[in-house]
Image (cartoon, rainbow over the protein chains, first blue to last red):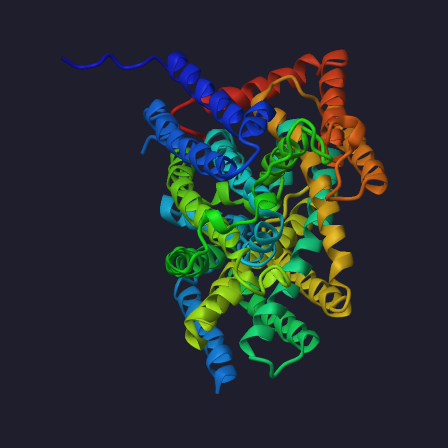
Length: 71
Length: 498
């Protein structure tokens, strides 16, 4: 059974959501404060940035073929 | 003998880069081809040109040194770099598509089109040039450390700076001749060496550090702290640094034009997709290595040399490889900057004065050569006063990010107007400049919770942009023109207008 393709609007919504999550992970001061002491600060940077790296793959999948020029 | 190995390695690598560049030579006689490389590159070239422009040689020196001396705080560069890649993904479609349809060559060119305004174009071009030149000068001077280290004590630090400046200036002969096409081809070679071989070196150093008792447990506790709610720097200081870096990223003219050089919007997105893991793995490894190296004797006395101190473990050969990594990264960044600045001066400052668009690349080549000579002269004249230039470079970052609201809202929001853009850029820079004088970088502003002058300027900048755009909307004809620009982005096929 195939998964129904997402509409363009739905894909835009998914991309915006991913963007907001990325911003919250890396920019939100309360997240910085939560991991402000000890080795957890190092792991925060490594894990949060790894998640944002993975989010690029999600963005790619959520874009379908949008942006591809017709030949 | 050691010096011959070190300097010889740099010369051999440079010869390889020039050889590869020259093989990719084509007759880029038009301004458009010279500035964009014919908009023909695939995603791997897009990825490497982004990395080689973004990760300058200073990542091995100043940024590694910052992490070795200030601790985990130095890893903030990882966060803003990845957020910049996320932004690249979203910018890909409008920037690449408008670039192709309207034959855009520079960042200022795109702003001139979006706002239909010569003043926006010129102001943006001037901000871009003035903010970038200190970084070019610093990039040239940073090679002094490479030539000093690779001389193994035979050349004084001052003479090493002179050699570094003259070397990188001479390398620009090929930048001037071959334009963006040459730069992007050389970025591939330089990038593979700087971040590919560089990563393998870092990996080896990490293994050595863990095996020799320099794990996370050996890092001083004060180096494992981020500014919290009660910190002297202010609770918003870290946010402010990351936010400034992210906002400023695509305001740099050299980085922005990379999105014009690849085949299609989807190619820009694919370049971002490929750049993210490479950037993460390389930068995470480099900052982690620098942090762990803080417990190695001698590093705290000269943190900026952490890269070479650690490479010294492997002897002369590894120090030479480490030097090539810095040179390779610097070549990419300095070359891209000079090429973008020269093109922007010819296309958007001189060119914007006339009615006809400049079609020949001759003016751009002269401008690139002129910017190279001026930058090299400033670098040589200030070779003894590097600390003063570092301050100017910090200030220039606070200035360049003031382009962000005009640039990003112009691309993603239809209602921004030229009057709003001009008022926002000027007010943002003025506020940032005044606050920068009172609270010089890297200090934060205590009564703003630790915000830096750049972010304070951005708040004013954004407020002015929105207020002017909403209070004095565009005329109906202008709004229809902007709507039509955005409508182009929805079309599958594009029609070239020029």
